[in-house]
Length: 461
Image 1 (cartoon, rainbow, N blue to C red):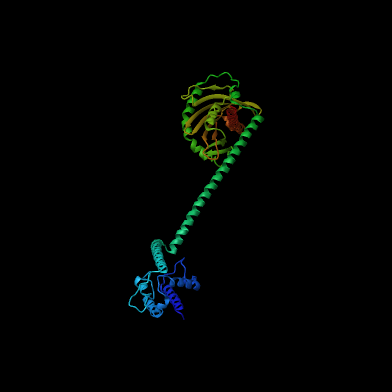
Image 2: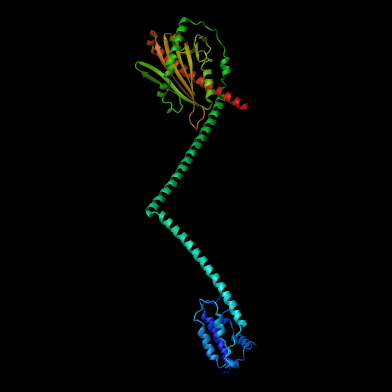
């Protein structure tokens, strides 16, 4: 083996030992030993050995083995603490021994400078890697601390499965209760809307019925009633004034009985149908009429019309007014005659009427007393009538209008021998009761027509 071949092997062995000696030489983008080809390494070695700064290879052949051993011995097994070989190690390996005592130091080659640069680059890379590792460790520590903190807070806030289930059940119950309340409110509103629709339909039917009755029966307006022919006024007798004064004094007591009497009539269950009943209180028999009318008109309008019709202007036969009342705006007293044909004869009833109006908040009460005296065939027969009428606005949210409750009682009284004649007495009683019914129907009919006329006039304007 020639000295050149031995030198080539020496260089190759040195490179192999150098690359394998350090565990930190590998760079992410650096070349590894596997990337080098033997031919290129040999070419680099020949150029290095052929440098002018070195002595001929033949002069160092005897010492090559010793120098190689010294060089290998000077390199540590691992180079984790040193990034590059020390100058002493590099300079001591390629010494020249020519048999003389002079030792010539070997000048740094280009390859050694490259090694120094590589070592510096590796050092920078290692520092960067260490910095990144430290940053990652710090980030891991911070995230771990946050995780532990969250876990601790979760552990502190954890509840037992039983408590969690109880809370969940309460939540669902609350949600279900709220939804039930909304559903009930919606159903209630739906019922109100249906009731409102029904009331409006009833109102339309009532108005249509009023119009049909007016066309069929003819108009009975306040003008027609007021324009009825008036008979010559009859002079009031002293007995008439005494009766009127007595009746006026009794009206206040009658007014105080209004609520009790109408409550006893049980008009809520009568459904608005008028009814006449014969009753007995102690030894006194009387006939009672009661009815309720729900008028689809305004309260004030109904009250005004009721008081206007209470004057009974359609009764003009021998009509006379009593002017001695204390409150003429709310009290009226009158006298008139009603003639009819009964039992083949012309008979008549003389009636004295006293009416008073009591105005309250959202209510008007009209009370009256009627003293009926039979004439002709009914001479000696009398009847006492007491009546109550209460007008109030409807309080129902589904029904607008005015409620008109009416009740009056006929108490027959007889003061002569004619009372022993049962057919005549019965005829007198029937005439009194039928007259009261006719009076009531006439007033209600006139009231409906008057209210309808006022409503149509307001719509037209």
